[in-house]
Image (cartoon, rainbow, N blue to C red; front, side, top):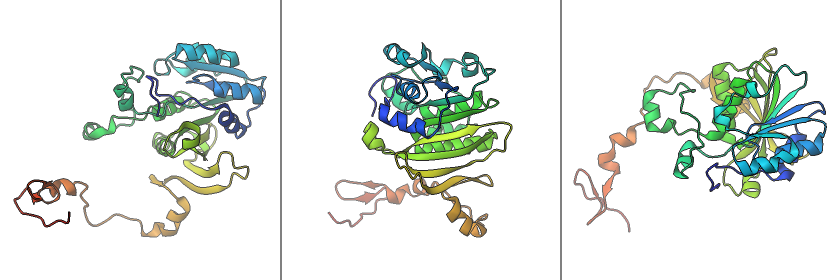
Length: 296
């Protein structure tokens, strides 16, 4: 896991190159990396399409100096700038927004003593009780991706970022609720343990934004990003306002899905603490005073 105040995982160049190959970046493209780190993706873009205009932002001063070898990189805090104001959208060139945002939560950054967190805002319209129960501890990578999609919602562009797989699912669900004009979403699996020594399910998450075309809130889950066949594993997404992990399987049982006549309680374990929580000494005993016969 990252142990610095920025919570970052620097991307190996080999992985960055392979990810960009899947996007087919043209020679006249503008390539933007909002959190460019040491510049692996900008370097990959230089190798694959050297004529592109490459732009990066990075908060770590030492990283800025390294990444500047591969494009126009400026020191800036992604949480404090509006990207469309920094990148003119009137330029007649396709825009590609790429990168690898920090894979940490706001709580983890706080434990590291970092101030590199965004100003808190209820952009998901979370209810007050949910916030108290932990929903305010958001994933920084997810926040950055949603910031990009919201700020460039009226600008056609191609998106590609490394992230945890559950972040990609959350982004698709948010986009559907917010009616963002996304389409052609796909997740290509990566071996996070190999590349980042992180025990998480992760992927190269791509999509396209185009307000002029029809939106689609499903995504293809594909094989490993290095698999030349790029075969489809499954498809997930929003079906009639419901996030579905496997659309094909759900379609086969969809007729059985409906409203339950029973009201299910999610707080059952709290209601049953008199039974579930035991006093360990001198012998296992319930809060109600009943001795429980348990094996050693």
